[in-house]
Amino acid sequence: THAVTAGPDAAGGRIDRFLAEAIGTMSRSRVKALIESGLVRRDDAPLREPAEPVRPGATYTLDLPPPVAAIPAPQAIPLEILYEDADLLVIDKPAGLVVHPAPGNADGTLVNALLAHCGDTLPGIGGERRPGIVHRLDKDTTGVMVVAKTEQALARLSAAFAARDLDRAYVALCWGVPSPAAGSHDGPIGRDPRDRKRMAVTPGGKPALTHYRTERAWGVGASLVGCRLATGRTHQIRVHLSQAGTPVIGDPVYLRRVPGAARSVAPAIRDRLLDFPRQALHARLLGFAHPRTGVALSFETPPPADMAALVAALDDAG
Image 1 (cartoon, rainbow, N blue to C red):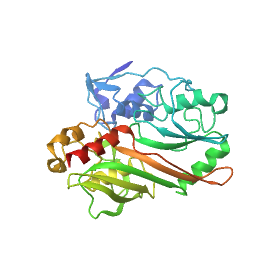
Image 2: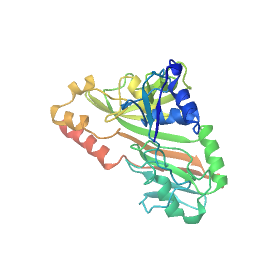
Image 3: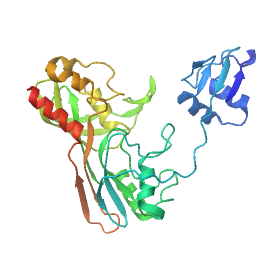
Image 4: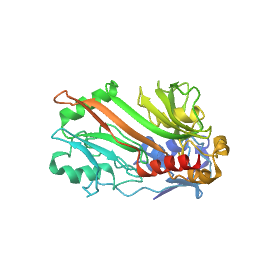
């Protein structure tokens, strides 16, 4: 823990720059990351904005997290393996599984599970912290993921994702019904200027294109929407569906109030939808060319039991 009291000469400067200079052993970017992670306090009040002006007389406290091992430890976490050979591994990721270690999730991740499953063949491929990871799914998004087991596979699969030379399909349970029933959401995505932990459709964002099709609809209150990605931005489907007025059911980030569409859902199922504990989003299909042989591979899984149960409940409610 570091504690620094600001003198009158520091008034008006950025707090991240002031703290980095006052401590002397930490970069400004490191201090900024600590602030954004909620690990810096001003007079016991948490700070969230690195650009906040320094307040003379205030005491700023930095709580440094414990050091993290340079190499994640293998952990015997069960994986649902759809396919495996010497080059790659395809899994059906469950909800709640973080892909790689990060602040707040130092272990218990897919990487820890992969290191245990693959033994000595995986470490170092693509970096010690994220060995073999080609792409990510959010912690509570389920579905098909591919992992590289060789440097060649990592390079070629990463190139395929970068060039969008693959097939990726998702399915989401949404509040409301898209209009028109099929089409595209085309809106650049970047950090939400009002909340750095969220993404948003913003003029300064990166191009993002999502094709969608309504597969089921229960009146005007809820729908099952299939999505295909033409780009791969962070939270892309969740942001685009929310922007279009059909947010993903259970989304803890992009659904912060009871949606108007909930009034159109039968009371018998409404609370169940409102209480769903995660975003109801599933990566159901992934198709790509095998990185060594070039053979076309395609893997598809149905939505997990919790999403299937919601669909059945919607059907029963009429």
